[in-house]
Image (cartoon, rainbow, N blue to C red; front, side):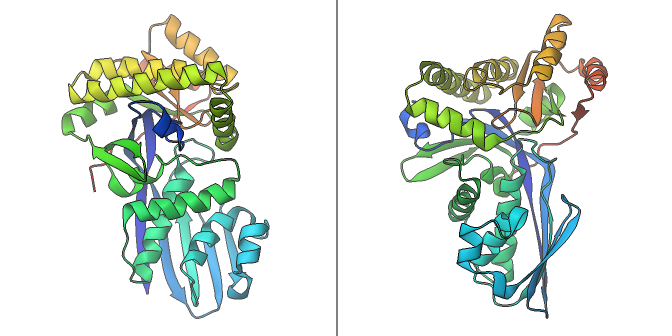
Length: 337
């Protein structure tokens, strides 16, 4: 028996880091806006006769084998016995698997990209395991499971919730954290999709990053009452809510400016959110009036960033990206699922 599943990685537009609980309940009018992309996590699972778990990681270009006897809670939760496969195996262990499996995985995003590739892959794997075991798949329950496992793996505070939903819902999402639940509103339209695809460029810097550290610095600073963090988060919340209203009113050019404004406000949250070389790139873009704004994806510190710009600026932007040895990542926005 073989099952397959896939789920989009996201590009966050505005409101990242606001999805850390309970910050989302403390600031007013908190929304997080993101898009599901054609960059997809992919999982294939088949049952095998051997009593082992075989994992083929297309990202690491490696194959791992573990016996079912190794799959104990003690080894999974309290040691680094399984190293980079710990996240995958903890998801498998949740299903109390008793037979051998061969699992093929691809996260859909470059390593350390800030596009939520591991979260999308976790959701995709859980959905595949639900299919395999004939269990019902429910989005909010799946988010709760994967966010809990990922939080245990990261061991650096509370993971945000925005990465999980695009993988299973597609489209253009507005996410809101409410007491006891996360609500989602689908903002997708063909008009908005075409506009964003023409006016946003996704770039991979190749710079390594650690999102958990940045998020923890922000989280700790927020609750320690650091004035720059509190002020920055309030600005991001206000900008994000204004961006939501701009989409609802079809003020799409305003949205481009707001994405750039959110990126600027984000710089105050923690040191190094925008690496020096990306700041140099941004200054050169600004001096030539090539872009309307730049925003780091995810928690920043490296990985990917997005540029907002006029629809006729693409060629000049690509020339400058080549100069800095940055890579443009082509993508389309996926329709709602």
